[in-house]
Length: 148
Image (tube, one colour):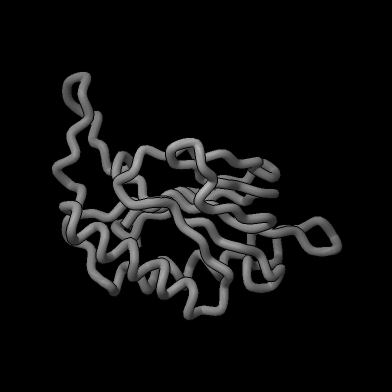
């Protein structure tokens, strides 16, 4: 799994001109599911994200996690994170999981985030979405379970 994690003041997802999800202070995660991913990768990534110490403490040091600040999580499916642009001019998505598998692991990821006690919202799988956010910091990290 690959995730782009952004610390946000707020974020929302719009589908067909209607806001379907909105969060305040927290993290917005773009999540890509790879063809070989399992629940093990999702479990690892959820734990990593909700405990990442990327929020500032009283001394303005990144020392607090999403759980520490009681922040919200917005998870948006993003298969294009898995686009391979090494050859040619059109990305190849052969490493991305198929839609059924990707949706199942995306929903599993969201369920695990909720089970961890974090207020979690999501985008709409396979929809054309407009994603708006105010990146705070800016703080943006890329996590890939293949790098572990």
